[in-house]
Structure formats: structure tokens, C-alpha cells
Length: 213
Image (tube, rainbow, N blue to C red; front, side, top):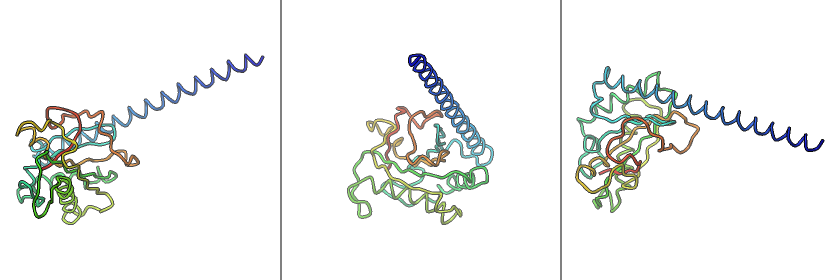
């Protein structure tokens, strides 16, 4: 009799595990479908409304949609002051993510550099400060000039430590100099996961590592 009870308990546990696994897979599928829908909406807006789709790269993962802006399009070398001509694309992105369709999502802005050392009066020998200052410059513009709530915006600098291409050619270095605007879909997750990215990435190596200059 005890053996029969043990077998029954084991079957119940197996059933519960299978149901939990199915539930998890369904949740992942739903999250991925949501990310894909937001990704498609972003692409449509940037093409039809903003006309700036060719100026950025767009990709998505389970918990964010990422818009990547080339560093040289936003900033002069070694600087963190946004170029006047860069405000056009930032305004389009800001208008989109400040609309009702996106107002439930938080925005994470990440600055990246290449691995060329910097040592200026504004940025002592560290690309970290430069990348953070660039992310903050974009974030402050969204808040101060476009009316974003400060509690929706986070700005982070990664320096040269998350490259997406080897820093072995001028072209790859340029690819690594970038600012990423992430529409965070799963805001309860403190750390935005970099794996499982689906949309077209900025360049060559798809490993998420970052840089800015």
C-alpha cells in the first residue's frame, strides 16, 4: 500500500512539473509575440511617420525592443554634446515612445564606445565616463525637451566593454560607437537580457558587448 501511494505522489509531481513547464513555455511565447508586435510597430512608425528607419538599427528580444543609433551621427569624436542635426532622429524616436502605444514601457538608454583610449579635460582616461555622459545627454533631452517623466528613463554607460564587433578595423570601431534606446517590455526584470535577440543587429558579430567614442 505505501508503494502505491508513493507511485501516486510521483505521478502527481510529474504532472505538476509538466504543467509548470507548459505554462512557462506559453508565457515565453506570449512575451516573444508581444516583443515582435512592438518591434513591428516601431519599424512601421520609423518608416511611415518618421522617415528615419535607414538611420537606425532595430532588433528585439524577449523583454525589450532596441533602437541603435550610430555614435558618429549623434556626437563629435570625444564629445557628449548632441549634434544639432541629430535631433531630427531623436525627436522621431522620442515622439514615438512618448505616445500612448508605448507609455506603459520604461526606456533604458545605453552608451557604448570603441576601445581607443580617451584622455581629455572632460573625460579623464576612461571611455566609461564618455559613454555614460552620452547616454545621459540623450536621456536629459527626452526629459527636458520632450516631456518624458524622469521615472521612465534610465541612462547607463558601458564604455568599450560590450562591443558588438571586434575592434580591429575602423568600420568595426564605428559599429561599436553607438547609443542604444531600449523599450523595456518586462519592466519587473532589473537586468535587461542580451541573449535571444531576434531583429537585425547593427553589425557582424552578434555578441552583445558595448562601446562608444
